Image (spheres, rainbow, N blue to C red):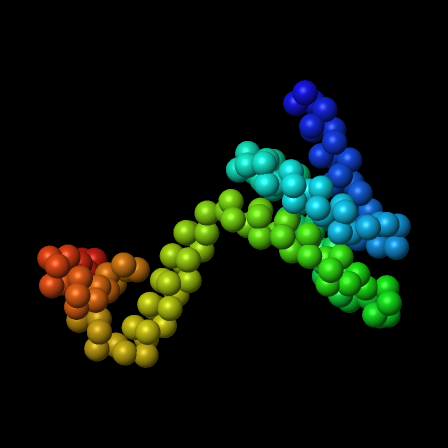
Length: 147
């Protein structure tokens, strides 16, 4: 059964790849993306499998291509594209974005420290070092790297 699922997924991904270069050949984007969305809805394992087959990247490429077509008639309607957006949301819900959030927070922290050098006080700050006053009142201490 696993090999059959793999073959079906490979075929579905190939249809998506072909649709980017020949969007008119895809009869119903709504139906196609509904099938992928239903598969992704089965669980985390299925969403990870779709990530493995680069469905996320190909779906984004397809959507971008559809909106860049010169004629509005050639573009798929919002109704037809709704399952594609649902598929994207479903797949993205399985992604752990913690490292990205931490990196962006660190970038923001570094930028704030550049603008306000007085915050440094000869200590290196890391993301998570700032706590609210309410946290300190509950006994959560402020920690600074190097202190």
